[in-house]
Image (cartoon, rainbow, N blue to C red; front, side, top):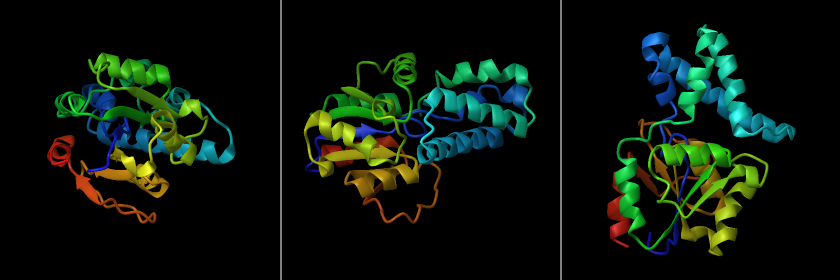
Length: 223
């Protein structure tokens, strides 16, 4: 971490719990809520990759709606819950350690940013609803380049903005494909392995693996 000048975070699954929308409705959905939430997320990601490959871009919110519609049919969720689930997705909960860690990092001499598939409006609402709007120097959305991660144009954005080298970015994501995307691009990628998962075979292995953001602080403090 000695040469790091910017700490950039993925948003969904890294800072904010993508399953929290369905979890808040688990009394209505029942025991299948977690399987439904995981299916929704997987379909959402698949649509981002497929649309990038097909050159048929839709913004992240429209993809979120499309993937929800498929998931509700697959799990036989009452259609009347659609708007409730979408509204909850706009205000996903952060993982419990996130606010405290981000506030501590704010006191350090780093640029702090989010680099996300989300639309600017969606990301700004998410940050504001969790009282984190004064933390980040920049919120980078893929809408600026019109293609989803892991395209290199996405990872270019902080480099161009801050006029720094790729290896001067510490990029944190809970998504293994995103860690690989950033790492293969040239970032110092860190895997936030919250669920004891297995890393992908995509020509990159992160040098640092943590289970939550609190474990990042000693590495920063030893800079």
